Length: 72
Image (cartoon, rainbow, N blue to C red; front, side):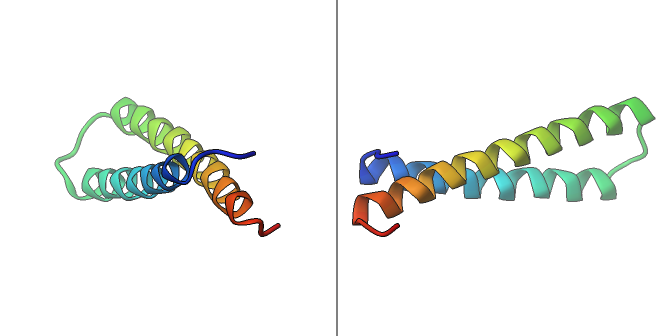
């Protein structure tokens, strides 16, 4: 897959930001006030889905970045 260098860098940066953001949310949920179990279940699902999306975006961005340099 070939994307522009800017698009590749943007995807890698977005993936890194998403991972940082959602891990910080998970950390903050663990140290915050007690809430209902449903609240934690829903947020755990959101965190998992977004971490998977970040991994997919990062992989696409990384592969595109490498393809732009001619490295396989």
